[in-house]
Image 1 (cartoon, rainbow, N blue to C red):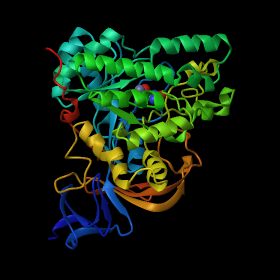
Image 2 (image 1 turned 90 degrees about the horizontal axis):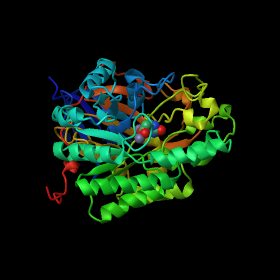
Image 3 (image 1 turned 60 degrees about the horizontal axis):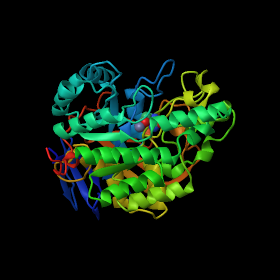
Image 4 (image 1 turned 180 degrees about the vertical axis):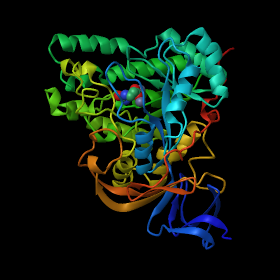
Length: 477
Ligand code: URP
Ligand code: ZN
Ligand code: ZN
């Protein structure tokens, strides 16, 4: 009998801290040995010439989410996790959204029903709190946090999601009490309403004006408000999908003050700009790029890199929120053609996150390959209570591995992707660095773009509380 079920031999292991040549022996889905020469395996994969990294963890993904009347998200758990696996990810964290007035527990069970038996990648859920009633904050949420749903997101905008300041404070207080990590969508509701009215009154309704209606100042103001509320309550917060300089500077300022404020950014903020939304007619594809916060400009790209290199951002996520473009249920819905305000917000990206960061970061010399691993895997696991099971390469970790060809040139094209959208916002982008094989708990789940894993092999992960969610302990109560 062989010592290992699988040996990944001859590759260059890259973790968030180290780069070295070694073989990896896998037994029962776990890394059992790392050594310079392993030979006794039932199966041997030759990884020579390749980087061997921890599987990608994408901690910001939307799947099968109700998105308003007549609008359907382009990915369910089957297609979304297939796309994730093909893009080199082994774990994703989608959201379970509470519609106002509904029980959080019932909603979580609904999402489990949607995901059970459908997933190619391991997964866990963040909660989205839209209705912080006394029973939600007093009973449901504390019980769910104890059950392993240890993070939740709140919104400072969107009609059906927005919380007012008092509600934000109450949710923050609940996070503090339960030890959960709060993620905050920072864009100011009233400012966006005001800008949208002014633009529509002036007849400026094309997708391009989506970006004009929510400029950086709107994100900056909300980020500052969220940071202040977090400081008042003494609770750590994670500001998600930061788009540019203004919000980045707010987070850096907070961190310099010693506050536990964390930051996430995404591919759209280093690879797209507001110009992509141009096209002053809804059929001219500007709607393809409509997401919130919107893509900005080249100075914002620089600011995002400043934030990545300076440690302002801990995670680089996709914010995969896929809709079809050429569809009445998606970007070209009938109402959507009457104003940017009706175009569903969000773009696909779970499959292209790693190649885009590798190209812009590692290939173009802005970050090291170890920083790449931290930003795409390790920090997500640490931030959201999955470490040390996920996010690293070491004895005892799940054998979630990504074999990566750092020299391979590819062009991102819709016809090689696996998501449910009918387009990619990154069509035609040339990248060097590409996933060759994704291994989920010791099983080959994707090879050369062909998904070989079994539907349902992706497991639900109950998470620990985040070590980053511990308050500073300065509040006087
Ligand atoms: O436009 C986006 N990003 N939509 C997804 C929902 C969110 O705010 O993350
Ligand atoms: Zn958001
Ligand atoms: Zn999102």
